[in-house]
Image (cartoon, rainbow, N blue to C red; front, side, top):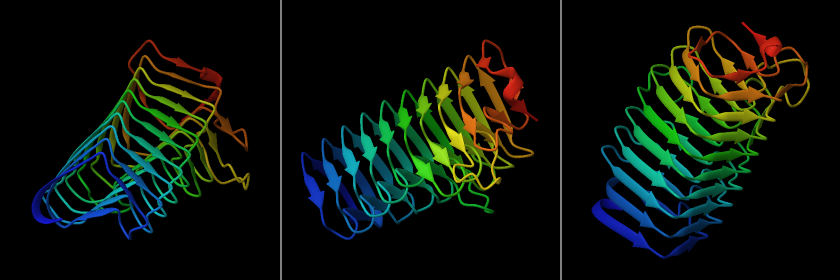
Length: 254
């Protein structure tokens, strides 16, 4: 797609390079399947693009389910599935993104479920993640379920189940780099693993908070997570406890 407004409905798109690449334009995807593509299911390469995805599936693509690589994109994803992709389920790596992911399942991807930002860069993304199942994703880095990289990202997670994810380094469930802001409300974060390769490098089985990140937590359950070195099984780092949480207190390290 280049400079066009495109709507894709009830299609299966497979065995392409990217299933769809958008360089400049707007894309609506409804009840469609993106599978076994050689790169991403959808790649947003151009700037100032609008992406809307409803009831669609991104599975077994060699790289990401969706890769947002163009700046200043607005994305809305609802009732969709990201599974068994070779890299991230959903990769939000450009600058100035406004993204909502709602009522979706992000499961068994071979890197982070949802990756936000780019390490070492000011990315200024605003990402809202509501009512999702983020399950059984694994990464060789940090943030098995959700990873927030770079600087000046704002992330809101409400009513999500983040379970069974693993990271070889920090944050089996969630990792938040320094310089970012996150609010967690009414989430269940359980049975995630940090330091999954058991090499002694990695903290925060449920949640890793980098020094200087601002994180508030309310009405969330963070327990029964694991750090294979047993140093900080549930939460590593400083956060604002905003009340009504169930966090295993003797497993918090700050």
